[in-house]
Length: 395
Length: 137
Image (tube, rainbow over all chains, first blue to last red; front, top):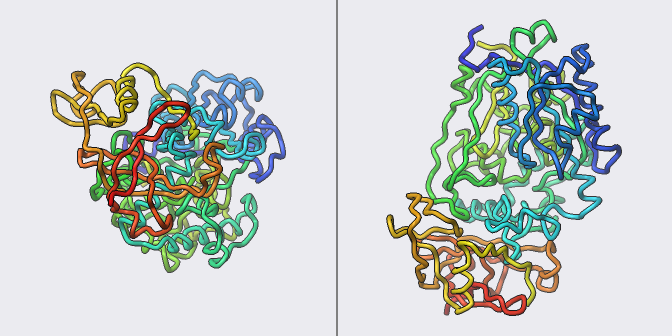
């Protein structure tokens, strides 16, 4: 077993989730407590085992770090919380790894409540007149400009999707395969919030919400919580039977050409238009290649993100994704299974923590009917260029 | 016409709205590297130069991209839903967001993307003038 700097030096030892539901069924604090209890029980440790906490989704979506620490009785000496947007899952778990690797903390809990269902019940849609963020001088975080009616994160996603379809000459019907494949995966996942099958005809006849996107192209407004505990690879071996090593990572990018729903170079908003050249830094750190990956879990608040991510990491060339995903390639028996839990579209919108929990189940070979046979390595990737590779063993 | 009001800080964005009020579209242009920039900001994003002028642009462009809203997010748009939001590519090398008058079929991607548009100023919210676009004949 060889480590490459931070690559392979840390591992996930425990995960736990609350139920993921379309309607609110318990308080945010109860969701958090349930996820943490399950994670701690799986390694038979008390709460004082945790000495660091990282939160990505505080107010207004979930719970802030201080409320979680007080409500669950945690005493930690390492704390961090990001802006309450979903995109920070890789940066957060990578920070957990850095904290453990550098000795600033020993056992770091990434704990997140995502209460989209409660928010929907209280205030209607995500985005629109209740959103303070859309009213900033630069608009919303996804390009929103309410003055012209460009509202809600979904508006930015629709802008990215339409540009993609027109630049590369797709009708848009090709998207169905992506949505239906994830729905099939969710139907094999007992914790998926979505239990209903979906046919191609139902998908194609559903109305547009923001054309060219339909409701099925968007994440589910679910309630849920997830806990993920990161520790050193050394300690991990004594704590659980199958540690899931964080073998490779590459961080999130920012700048003129970055839009969280679009590949750099797509040419929306202030992006330049060019052909993006992919790289494999996380896989290089892990000492593997794409052929070694047994699955890809992608942040998919909206379908254009899945497309941008698949192209960003070079699984196909820019503009090829909607052809590449066809004919079973991303299904459980395909060449590259994608979002095997159902993803945000059909399992739950847990801003990526559900994808990471799924990777742990897959690499521990405990994913039941949706298990990818003999899974050894999987990657969690996001459209802003950040990715983490997880491995059952570190080479 | 009522619209959700734009955020106006009255710092570096003040001249933009003063020009709009005179029905002129002026954009920040760097005196050091000669580049236009958008959205409004205190320094040139290309060279971080702080010396700039508010430079007039031609007021014409092409629709590079668009979406159609079928859902109401702001009550001001309720009576005109479904409505179109477009990205307008300017010859000065910028892309702005706006609505476009004169599109016959909101769903005809082939005729919308690439269409030539010309600027006009719409008065909304009791006297605020905002840049808007209509199909150029």
